[in-house]
Length: 181
Length: 204
Image (cartoon, rainbow over all chains, first blue to last red; front, top):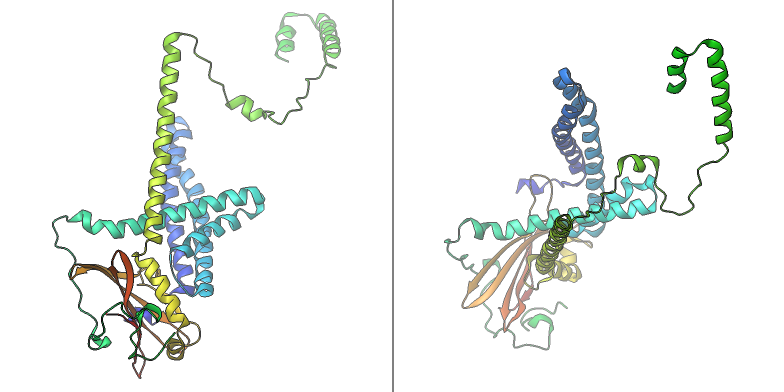
């Protein structure tokens, strides 16, 4: 229960900037290594490659960090405004991040990168959703069906009224309880 | 210019001077005709002129067949890709908007909790709702359990609520009755003392 004592939100931005920078650095190193190797002079392949990595991969890292920090900031703002955390937040903030980072290129480019950003984030969210939903079933098809849960004890004894009979009140709330609607 | 250099080796200086004069005179007469400027929008830049090369149309029969075949393959690939994305979007939309998806139940339950006066008394005027927290500080995943009991499909959803005054846990369960998903129960429990359980819906 300790993990709920601190709100993740403002601190999460720093975490995201750092992890995005690391990700960009590693990915950029790998990516730039190919280009450096290809474009280097003949006897100096290794040196050229290393120089290219040193010069370019940090830039890629910084670009990633900008993206991650912006994304996380907007996500936190949306959480604070909507008071709800769901995939829509991250899709919207992906789009806004794309737009805001391309703000100096004019509205057309902004719209394009906003669409791209939100589509990518929607993809990521979707893949996450689908994997969490289907991975268990795919891993072990012979596992028994999910066990039936008992009713929570704090709800008290099962009410005697038949379910779904009382149509006059919303959601069939039994008359024994105080009127809540 | 290369032209000049080559000739400068062969010719004597005076000859070269004469020759260069005639050449420059020729060039002067040539100069005035400038390249006609294209007015249309599809003008190509210099970089495009250098780098973009149009592929020649195949003239032989076998070449034509090969081009057609490769074109067909490309179109099929694009169609398959579009179809895959469509299927993905369809699945996602189903996950999001289905009546029995945890996300939908979470949305509805949170709306009910927010509207409820007693919940506002317990937690405060504005109530935030979120799911389980991951190590990266995301709280998007709503805990849920789908099961079958007495021949009925049920889904139980657990999420966290937090207001200005207190925080707690909300649990909701829905059951499929006659093909329609209906509430079975929805209640909230707060964490601080005095601990109370407030039942919003009890439809068991």
